[in-house]
Length: 173
Image (cartoon, rainbow, N blue to C red; front, top):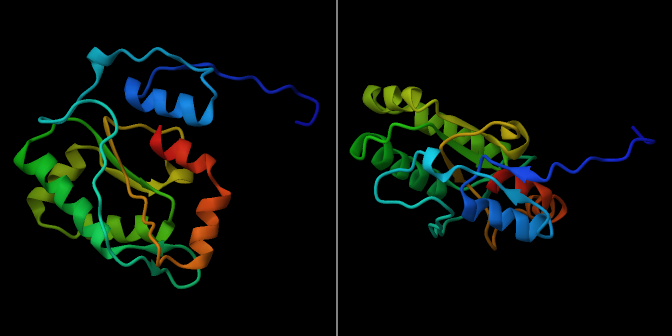
């Protein structure tokens, strides 16, 4: 409402400290108190809690009127998920978040059209893929952020990213 003063929720307890510190620095000017119990986090074998970057270079294509998608990024995420869930038998929950509906749709289709063993592993991991808007308020033990961006991306999609920086906070945290 117009006449109500906003209330800043200054504690965060859902993200690994490296992730919460990133959001605290970039979006909250150091005002957050990070209260995450790191012992309670489920982390895939061979990783530490926090932010990990995987460089994927591929054409970012127009989604036909709204948004965009990157086929190489979709395939890379399918590969990461197969290793994490099938080869390394990760027992936690997993999600993928992206700024673009077209990317989310293609990821969902590609992941769930796979073989029965992988499909069952996705269900067991409570797998969910959505846009930052759709994922807001939800959480998983492991989140993959599908940026779906590059120098050749459609101009409208590039503008969307430029104008909605707060979505990065939602996606990362």
